[in-house]
Image 1 (cartoon, helix red, strand yellow):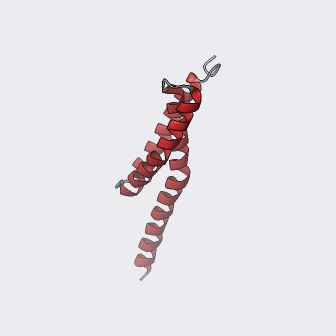
Image 2 (cartoon, rainbow, N blue to C red):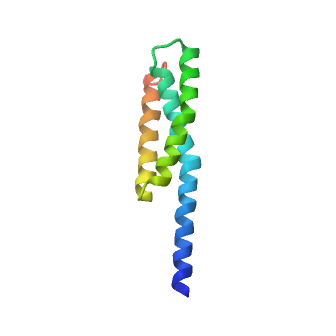
Image 3 (cartoon, rainbow, N blue to C red):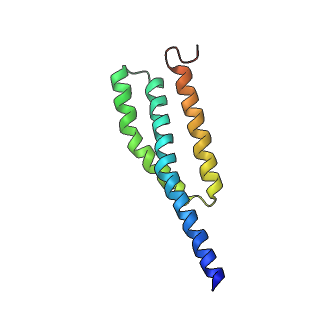
Length: 100
């Protein structure tokens, strides 16, 4: 009886971790990619921001699907952290005065 409670608790923690990854990590990654795309697209600033913002909804949905479809939770968190850090770092370098 005690083993099933432990398994249930473990399962619930894994689900809670995926939900946290989806809400916090998914939002952070989507925001970082949106900023990076707005800086990279060869459009006028207002149009680049608008286009990247519209694309962000589809990107966030894709990130959510990936988070809940991935087999390993460690891969999810590592992927979110690394991709967000790379996008945020590139955005910082591309901002006027960011790399100086």
